[in-house]
Length: 116
Image (cartoon, rainbow, N blue to C red):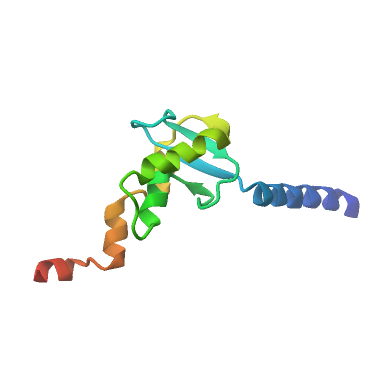
């Protein structure tokens, strides 16, 4: 009985360890003028990305992103795609790529804009 529980537990630990060591991430690329088509991709060595992320959300989180931040982030993914899956609008919305929400969190409150 103990052996039956140890095998699945060991498998789960090995999968989690492999994901952590390979730095596997799910990156959602929206439709647009990119080198890559709109897709959801499983990438390795996705350092800087969250577990489920998009290049737009990555650039939104930076304090001072460059003008071509989206293009640079997308170009870095070209060689690290392991698996291509269909584009998911729900996953893209989950990554919170809206820069307006980020700006409101940093310091632009409705009170401040109404005073100015």
